[in-house]
Amino acid sequence: MPQRSAGFADPIIGSVVGAAVCLLVSLAMICGCRMDGIDRIGSALAHDGVAPNGAPKILVKDKIRVHALSPNPAQSLLVDELVELKTEIESKTGINLSNASTPIDVYLFKDEMSFREFTAQANAVFADRRAFFIRSKEALNVYGFWGMQVAEDLRHEVTHGYLHGAIPQLDLWIDEGLAEYFEVNPDADGVNATHVRLLADLGRQGNWKPSLERLESITDPTQLTQTDYAEAWLWVHFLMSTPIGSEVLTTGLVSSGSVDQIPWSVEVKNMLGDANNQVLNHLAQVTQRTLTPSTVTR
Ligand SMILES: [Zn+2]
Image (cartoon, protein in one colour):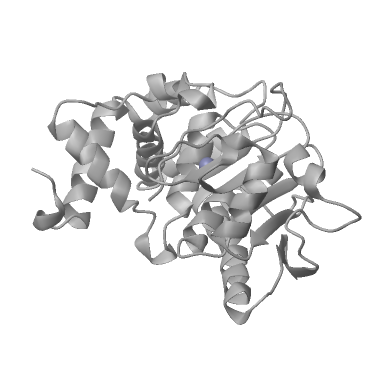
């Protein structure tokens, strides 16, 4: 499970104005998730209609357009999974994603080396990142490479693509919480075992306690820590675990970015009461059924 943080100003673009970037990174690295502007990373390296990764072939299914140098049957299956992901997100969030008109372009590099060469040209900030997502006015672009964790990486980034294609403005924590939820294998019921383990350990050590008020107050993506990512996932998993929580989630997403939007923490408190304690109980239940005794750090 890569460590992530969200949001940074792209040194190429210089200022932050309106796109979204999420970077999946290695365990020791941090990633960013939101910035504004155009996708200069891609456009700077695209020439004469050739994709940034030089891929001449495009594998198109529904809203997903995969630009790959050498498409293979496994990639086709992965695209099928990404198309099914849209239905899963719609089912779990109650949000209709089918009306979004912008396709999600996935620039899939053939291997890590070629991806590293690309990120080195584009921006040093991207060094060591495994995948990232950039939203601009015109496009929803995902960059990644064919490797052992490509399925997880693309599920995470394409989740951002689906959400940003349908919802004009998303609070940082819910954006990342949902991406963390949907990145796991569909059979895992959204349980992100790495996050469960981290939060359980931190809680046991007295080094963390949940606070949605604190989490939603983070608007600078560079300030998101790995613990914040884990907590964002936990809140999403908690909300989805009950009908009333799911209602809060759907209502919040529908009103997201509108004048009618109520702060998530206020709405959660109105509907669920002292949710900070409830989410701890939820974590305890998930921990019990997810982690075997031998996997729990003591
Ligand atoms: Zn992300």
